[in-house]
Image (cartoon, rainbow, N blue to C red; front, top):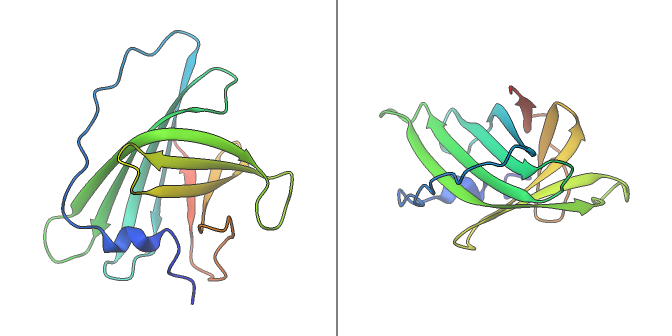
Length: 143
């Protein structure tokens, strides 16, 4: 069973990362927003909202990731993580794959996403592997 993934997100404490005020984005910067509901071990799901800001034609940039734990019996618990996005070439199955690695500002969290196409990111584990599960680990571009 491969829920040991970056589903370490399920092990979060309620300590929230500080939200960093977005600096002025230059005119040659782009912003992408991806969303999706991913599986969770201790909730009905986790709604991911990932905002990427980056200079035009650059593989690096910044991110804000909000994770809302759904169906926990209380109001949805939301965690916000901010940090840097780095682009890597290759994953466990394809040397030409594009992987976005998100490293939190506090250095405690790393998320790996396969850039599958212009509109889809897929959550990978720490070895840059997709889940063997039939569950949905994808985020879709909304803006």
